[in-house]
Amino acid sequence: MTWIVAPEPFDSADAYALRRSYYDEVASRYWRRAATEQEIDEGLADDGVEQLSFPTGEFLVGRHGGGPASCGGVLLLDATTAELTRVYTRPGKRGTGGGALLLAGLEDAARKLGATRMVLNTRLDLVEARGLYVRHGYREIPAYTTGPYMEIWYGKDLTDL
Image (cartoon, rainbow, N blue to C red; front, top):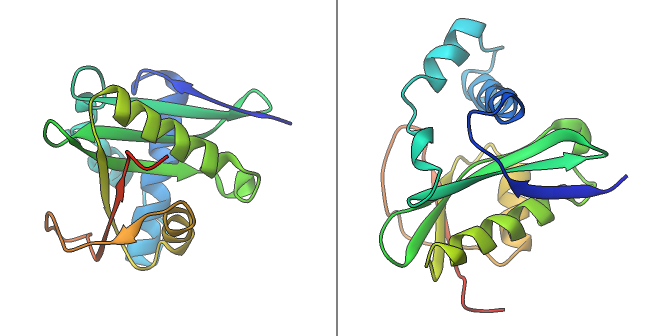
């Protein structure tokens, strides 16, 4: 089976289902219990995802064997810096190469928006995501923003090919 990663509206049925799965996983890990449907709904409400479309960002969906299996977005923070956000691969599809393709697609999307640097924030317990970022050249940087779910920050120069 092959992976295909492409831009998709953040509110398409597949993108929405992937965003729900993403929020379910990160919230459940954080709370150390299963997130409820209501908590997932509340987490997705007014989460700013509409900024992940041109001209302020882009949202991508990865498909494995034709089915939706991963997603992620980039958001321009300023004229040259983009933020990686909502990066998710379904657990059963991890380790199949989709994360690397998704990350490459998101970096390309950021470049097309004019970014020369990518930054992101994440939590220490999201070890799979952190491993993906480090394997692909992201390095720990000082905090560029703060919030209750931010424990570590990474950055990457997008001009290095």
